[in-house]
Amino acid sequence: MATFLRSHPRTAKAVAASGLCTALTLGAVAPAFAAASPPRPPAAPSLSALSWEVMDAGTGEVLAAKAPHRRLPPASTLKTLFALTVLPRLRQDLVHRASYADLSDVAEGSSMVGVDEGTRYTVADLWRGVFLSSGNDAVNTLARLNGGLPRTLAQMQDTARRIGARDTRVRSADGFDTPGQYSSAHDLALIAREGFKNPDFRRYMGTKWAQFPAAGGPHAFGIQNTNRLLVGSHGVEPYRGLIGVKNGYTSQAGNTLVSAATRKGRTVLVTVMNPQDGDSNTVYEESRELLDWGFVAAPLRARAAVAGPQHPSAHRRAEAAAPSAAAPAQEAHQPSGLGRHLGAAAALLALAGVPLLLRRRLRKGR
Image (tube, rainbow, N blue to C red; front, side):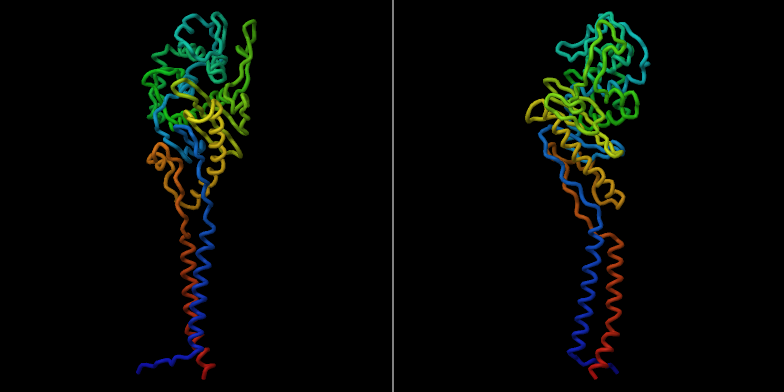
């Protein structure tokens, strides 16, 4: 025979209290675990450059980008590909006497370090001329030492293909405006990151001042790196921790810059191509903004990766984005699986206490 409990005010209060306890338990546990989720990176800066990319150089992860595969004239930033290709092929202590043939193919209007016909230079001297003064005369001399310009261009294209720089087509060794030549913010970041593996590349890209040639002599003079973010010049403050890499300018490319900085063991790599606002310093200031953002975002992204995959790949988002789109917004965090399990357990415990509480209340009511 079925037994029915008579409704009683105390019984109703007991059930209500138990339900409130359960609700409070569930409400408190989930937010506590949700709050433990890693904080999300701030939104990337909005810049005027046609294309840019921020990469964690240690992992190769693209942290944010705008039109990273847009094919644009690279100007002298293409010299990083020249260096990546030719540096391992020539001994640094090799001595060469500059000739008229070394200089005859340098395009009119090129940037020059001042290679002097008849003067003796080491290969290391010429590389300082490339990285510090962006000297196309030094590039042409090194290309001839490497077996000639056609061979060097073919090797550069092979290097680009090998490292996955598929947006790059090489038509000159020095980056001077040439029909059909282009690269991208993403490719230039890949090239620089690959260059970091070569100690000579790293040394030259971070050299601020040098004597040219280093041995001295009547034709020697001092040269300073034209990367204003590295040395601090022309109204640009030097960036703390900057280690290189290469700046460029042509009438078609506008201002371009690949830069990298290291802080607390983390290296952030930034490419900026052709800013549309301001003057010749804008490329440096926009790069500064991206470096600052990268040093905030990179550790947060690393912590999020350790906590679990909660964000779509930044590189896939960058490829899918329109050319004017910056880094997309991050997705909201969800409570962890542990939080859900503890919440459920708390609910069961609370519900299990209801019969005992009811019996005690009924005895007192009698």
